[in-house]
Length: 159
Image 1: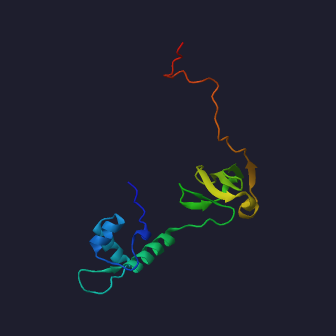
Image 2: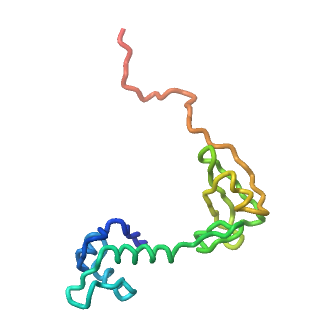
Image 3: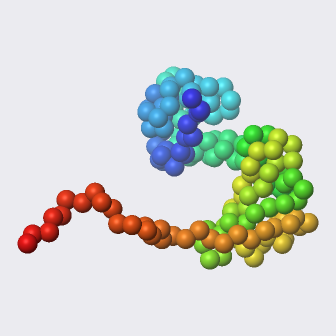
C-alpha cells in the first residue's frame, strides 16, 4: 500500500502538539512523528513529553514535500515508470485539448516505452517542447448521443 500524503495545513501554526496529538491531527502513527523527529523535526525544548510548535511542524512537512518534487526541464515529460524526466521517443507528441487554452501532452518514453503525460498551455508548447513534433488532436465531444432510445422504461401509455 502506498504511503499517504500528509497535509501540513491541518496543523495549527500557533498550537503546540505532543507526538500523539500531532499523529492524531495528521492521521499518522505516533512512531511516524518520532521518525520525523530523528530526521530533523525540532521539539520546543528537551523536556518530556516533547512538544512540537505547529509552525515548525508545518515548515518541516512543506520542506520534505518540496525536496521530493521533480521539475521537468524543457523538452521532457515525467515518466512515472522511470521516475525521471525523459524525452519523448522520436520527438513525437500528441496534444489533447482539455480547455480552450490548455490541454495534455502525451508521448512515449524513449527508455521504457511507457506513456508519459504533461499538462501545458497551448501557447507554451513551442517554448516548453522545442524540437518536438506535436500533433494536435480534436477535443472529444462532451455530449454523447444515443442512436436508439432506451427500452428499459417504466412509463406505460394509458389509453
